[in-house]
Image (cartoon, rainbow over all chains, first blue to last red; front, side, top):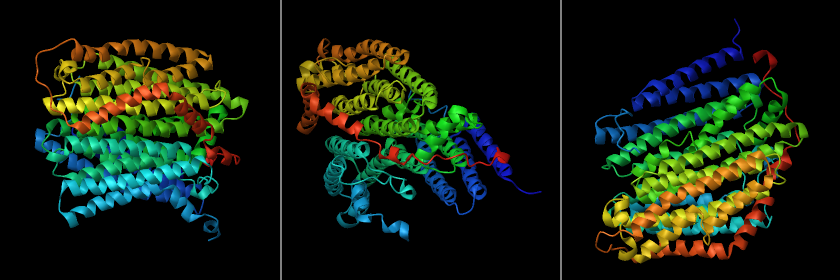
Amino acid sequence: MTITLSHYLFVSAILFASGLFTMMTKRNAIGILIGVELVLNSAGVNVVAFDRYLGPGRLDGQLTALFVIVLAAAEAALAVGICINVYKNLSTVDVDTAARLQG
Amino acid sequence: MNAWANIPIAEHLFLFSPMIALTATMLAVVATPLIAGRSTRAVAGVASIGIVVAFILAIRVARAVAQGGVSGFSPQPAAGMLLVDNLSAGFQVVLIVFLAAVTYLWWIGSAARERNAPEFFILLLGSALGMALMTSSANLLMIVIAIETASLPSYAIVGFDKRDRLGAEASLKYMIFGAVCAAIMLYGASLLYGLVGSLAVTDVAQYAVLQLADGDNLLLTSAALLCFLCGIAFKISAVPFHFWCPDAFEGAKIEVTTWLSVVSKAAGLILLTRIVLIFSSAVDSPLAISIVQPLAWTIAIMAAITCTYGNFAAYQQTSVKRLLAYSSIAHAGYMLMAAAVFIHPAATGHSAGLSAMLVYVVIYLFMNLGAFGVTALVSWDAGTDSIDAFTGLARRAPWLAVPMIICLMSLVGMPPLAGFLGKWWILIALGNLDTTLGWFLVITAVFNTLFSLYYYVRIVVQMSLRDDGRPQPSVSFGGLALVNICAVALLALFIFAQPLKSAADRFSTKLNPLSATLDHPRTALLPPADR
């Protein structure tokens, strides 16, 4: 069986859907961030696959994938830092209990 | 090799010199503690020098660009990731002025208690750099990176005080919401790349307009575009992407709130403006013009909802900081209305809506800086930003109360203050469309203005008509000077508004060099078998 673009897009669509589902259902901040990482990676799979199948000599997508990795790493580092800070202050990272700011 | 030969590197580096100066300042701020210890004074000094240098460079770049002495990056298709034109150069000047004002506010309010000044300035300058990049990007990847460069330091700076529970909670909410929006935006960008085969916004616009006219990929293109616009709507905090805004603004330190409430939104609006301009310059055939109507209506309805929601939610706030946060959502709505004008097909040129929006952004900067400045001074003195802290302020501290009244009335849009002119020109631009959309927005804006009068006047009443015998607040002279300068500027901008307006007109006509590169139509690169 030959692997076509559709196969890659299918994988990335599954990643995106599970990421979106995770983001919407999880109440734990770390859980939501895992969903974000899944969506970011689905975008990465997308651009690399498009690069490969749209024609030879393309670099835009591969560069984009590199930047996606860097963005994901930066975001994760910062997010975990913020989560630790929240945990120290509130003893939880549940986004529903962190609800003192309202109105 | 040959491609590089005709790119004048030095000239292009000059165009980006304000951003380079901001980056260098960040590095210098990192290096300062190694030499001078963690002295707040030394760090603030280094940062101030950097900001002044960046300001001078930004003025020079803006002047050079306005005179047409230098070109943008647009002629080279390969280098079309960043561009400098009147819009971005002008915004950079405004941004750096505001950066200086926020630094000054921090200096008089928080510097004495601040132990982590180097980190504060790295984050502040980093988000400024990101906002400058946002206004200069013309490429999907570049836009994503710029938004993240602006956002990541903002998340951290909102929760800057580690012992502050509200700040921690605010930064968590801001970060979660921002990360989700950024991820969805990036997914949209990846789909657009696959559909269009290029990351340049010009190509995307051309492709999208073709698809909207009669394309097989209409649904996918619209979905990808909508995903991409999530990230920008998040920056503007347009409804329904506004949930982070009041929480982040209330939990953050007040100088950070001031920073985020104005320039972060303005940068998002300028980015949206650029995308909208590129889209509308891709629409030239009469067939495609009928397609832009839904796009204009989308922005118009979003603007109307944003503005109405902001005003209604501000109604019952007791924290002045939070009230001003909702008011900033409402004002983002007014500015979005202007964006709906210049994408509308009935608009004769882009200039009316765009110049109204630019004027509004400049005036809004002074109004919000003044209002937040007074709130900062009062809350530093009273230890709370609740509306009770403002009781009897007109008697206790007229030099605080008068500028606050001027700024609030300007936010309502009362003559003879600059806020009135800002709204007036947006309404004129809307009315000149003479379409259902225009009049719908005019009515919405007028009703919202009347409605917003109530909660702004509530603060004025609290300051002037009520009194509970509180002692006089002790406020630094510098703080008084800052807010009074803002108030005087609002009066002066009303009287001498013509130079501002004509500058904005000039900016909005000599814009968008990218439209020149739109003469190579692209077709869908996604092969039919893989659709």
